[in-house]
Amino acid sequence: MSSPLIFSTKRSSFWPVVVLCLGLALVPVVAVLTKQGHWVSLTTQMMILALAALSLDLILGIGGLLSFGHAAFIGLGAYTTGILIQEGKGDLLIALPMSLVVSGLFAFVTGIVALRTRGVVFIMITLAFGQMAYFAAQALYAYGGDDGLTLDGRSTVFGLKLLSNKIVFYYLTFACLAGCLLLLQRLSRARFGRVLLGARDNAVRMETLGYDVFRVRLMAYVLSGMIAGLAGFLLANHTEFVSPAYAAWQRSGDLIFMVIIGGVGSLWGAVGGALTYLLLEEGLSGLTEHWKVIFGPLIILFVLLTHGGIEGVVARLRDVMAGGRHD
Amino acid sequence: MSLLAIQVLNGLQLGLLMFLVAAGLTLVFGVMDFINLAHGVQYMMGAYLAATFIGWTGHFVIGLGMALIGIMIFGLLLERVMFRHLYARSHLDQVLATFGLILFLNQGVKMVWGAAPLGVPVPEWFQGSVLLGDGILYPVYRFVIIGSGLLMALVLWLVVEKTRLGMLVRAGASNATMLSALGVDVRKLFMVIFAFGTMLAGFAGAMAAPILSVEPGMGDQVLILAFVVIVIGGIGSIRGAFAGALLVGLIDTLARSYSVDFMRLFVGPAAARGIANGLSSMFIYLLMALVLFLRPDGLFPARGRT
Image (cartoon, rainbow over all chains, first blue to last red; front, side, top):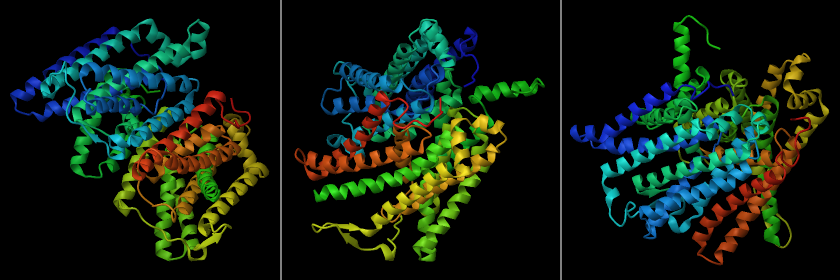
């Protein structure tokens, strides 16, 4: 897989993140001032998707491992939260750690099996594990089974109903996204990220240098699963509903699309990808109920015409402008 | 005991249908190194075309023949317009592009044929049941599916093992670059394999149409099961696909039937069916995890692949 060297310059990834965070921090203020309340909810949803895409980008972009079952972790986080809320133990202090533990454990166990394989088998096995989680959710007959489960409300914080407030929930989501973005950015520059990146390009060489590639990949996989579980926790609270569809493989495909369109491995690009996806969905579903008939070919055209997301297109245009040839 | 016999036959029938889908998938991947997620929607298209043509002509065999020709043309068209440009791309690009095709076709059939499932009547000749002793009746049409599945497997085996074309296919699965260097027109070979794989998937869909409901998204589940089959059997290996498909078909059917009975010991019938459906689907994936853990290359790895 040939992709541009990522994280090579500090400049390119620092300022966009600052601008993005400032912009997102101001959304509720602008929304309240202009009385566009639904922006808050829409942007919350976008940030949750971005968080999920970000977690996928860690293993797909930096690790070079194409996981096609990533939605499973979202589903696990969401179901853990949903079930705890229904059982009256939905406080943030219980539900959040439990969501992280459950999704992390699932990532650990499936990672041990999946990471033994490479290439196409990895794609298929993660897809299969994702389906396993999907069917497990379907089998939860006491919690809605196939139809999903409408929750009694959102998680409380120390018994207080803080999260019912849209703005508070917005900033909680924002804090999670910004925190994970910074964490992953730091990690990707640290030795951990370098080894992961090195293993993507040449695993044998990293092994020879004395790194335990399997262990580093497993750590990345678990971390990625936990961040997606966090997104699941937020999603269950945001929609006050959980359904097997959260873990469906189409959702995993959507996440891959978000990561690709934002530019693989560029972390903040995952946020742009999630935004693009939601805008496309909103825009196209406004045109026709069969919006996927347009969306599908758009994905195909995107893949056929570009390499490596919006950034690739920009780089290509720049080359054309400069009179050079791409490739 | 009689229940077991029926379930084994059902498992055999599911396994053979799975084999038809998995054989095309594993060939396309083995020879072209191409991950075709859209293989499942080709199965779906086969079922839809069969439903349409059988409805038009009112005759099962003629309708089936027309559907096979239709699906082959459809496959060649796709190869020409889209897939050909993806062979040299990364797996990531292939996955994403064929994912887009799935979205398009699933929604497309909903637009053309509607979201409601279509029914295809069981052909007149094959209506009725066979008495298997002990008063067990088994539908004739299901025997037809088993028979035609076995026949297709035999034809496939003969073609791959005994003909020149099959030799090229096996050579391609081992090393396509070398084959090309030896002067074989690999592009043409790719096209033939692709059309053949599409036809097999379409045939499976068409044969399944009278016993399953023909609906949008029916190929997705089959695709994922076919992936499991070829991972268990070993990628690129027809023998592996055959063994894997029968294994998956039998285990899925038996687990489904017995876990309903098992769960009924604890909960009501409706709940038992819901839980058992989920549980038995999980069995297959556990089986795959186990096989991969013990033999990462599958049960019958294709010879010469590295």
